[in-house]
Length: 492
Image (cartoon, rainbow, N blue to C red):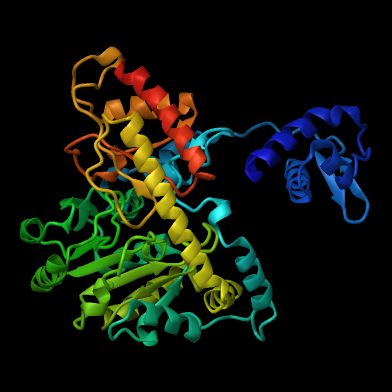
């Protein structure tokens, strides 16, 4: 059983049994709970910590856990209805909206209920994360001289140098800023490059989190279609001319959600088109370290081939480690670097030094290349397992492209099966929602395709992640459950 579900189940049982003890009464020892429920000491510790956070138990080091005494009755709830007026007044005129739609991001961040197969996850399953290596790195980092002091605003020089070497080309450590995760770096880049109310060109489809960042900054995302070879240069040039945009955001390597890699003949053309438009290219190089075992040599980042400062490059350690290991880099050349630096300092000051020191310890350890090799082999096995299961059990779904990197597939849903009972109609966004709901009832969480489009989608899709599940056996079970959901929605 997964640790998360074990903790939740133990909390439920202990909460139910609290009535057996009088206020202040002592609960069984941690060792007794481990023996009784056949769970790990870590599970017991986390369950007791959750109950303590709820105010139901009190833990005393060396003494044990005790039932908490009843809390005083809560004060009557106040009247917060006045906030509706304060939060909405003149909102229509705001260039930067005060309310933000995070629904597209929450789909991949929210943990599904216990027992549900997680095909919607955006991060590695705990069994794939380098937990021991990260723990050891954090312990060593905490003992480094000055580890708890204030770091340089731009980041530790050694870490900036490591990221610069990874980007390649003529990028130097002086042109790299350390940031708190790729999402933060993208937000900084868009704030620096595009004033509120202006258009920003985006791939279509693209990562919903980036669309949310753009809209939260008051920008207007304009879609540029992507095919199997990445963004289409002719349409990119047309979009620059039609909108006057000065920013294009792209993922040239294993694009989310299509998995496309920008073709060699298009790389220089994209940079030339942006340079001619006087525009920046924000390169989100988010899964370079999640390459599959059979991928072959990877193309260099666009930033490595850019002497003129067209590219603002974003890369991160998070996807290859843990959602909580939020260390990333933002690289740029020329005057824009100072603007990026200023915005980051105002927004976040700096990334905590212990986390930066831990990142240095991790990437400099022998465990790091071993981890990347293990993840590379496992992701290939999971991709192949999901591809085979879909083609065997759900041939109605079309897989136009099977990527050699990243952590998900992007199947297209069949047309003409959008209604329940096989009613003939196009499978639009409503059909995606129906399938997503039916899938959750069947015990598998999937991601609908509509949030990945900034305008009307040309077809219905779902995104299926194979990184957040426990193993290939869970992939087979998840596809079986998805087949049950499809039968409910499509009929047959």
